[in-house]
Image (tube, rainbow, N blue to C red; front, side):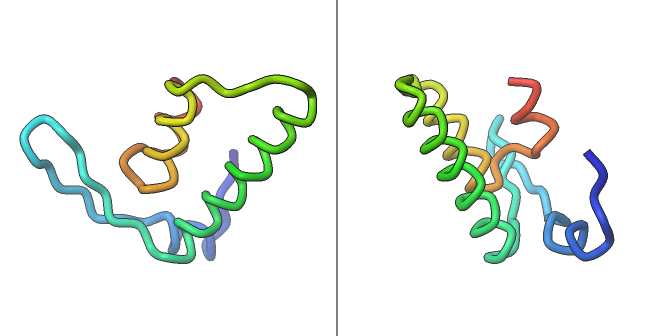
Length: 76
């Protein structure tokens, strides 16, 4: 997935570690963009008659909160 310069600015984040857990700070606009995309995708899946597992919902939350990158999210 190609990212243009404006998107990259929002995606850029500061990564720190707390024990074994990676903590990434993403901008509010990037968080809102991720949340909107996940909500849209979830609604689409549910309209098709499927339900997301709790594990999938947890991955979604971690992606929205910036705990994992897009690359990590797709790999999961």
